[in-house]
Length: 79
Image (cartoon, rainbow, N blue to C red; front, side, top):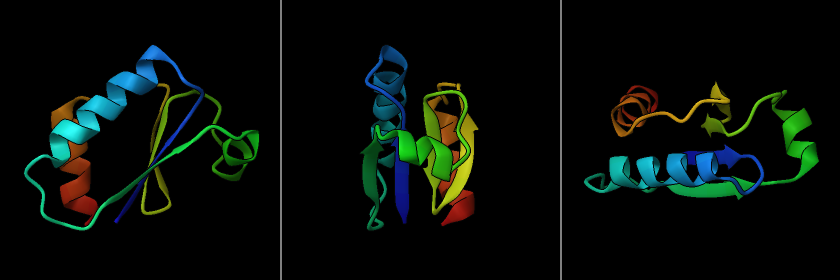
């Protein structure tokens, strides 16, 4: 599974990153987390609001800091 966080360095990006790490703390799957800041990624995934969360090449959210519970749910459904 691959998780991408798209957006410039901001407090919201830091918050969503922490929530993802908490959600993954009890997960034994092989999950790769990537931070993307390039403008080309904004265009590639059609992102207009950051931070954006992409799981397995599917845009899950834009402009929202998902809670740990929401992230855990998406990971469970998409794995």
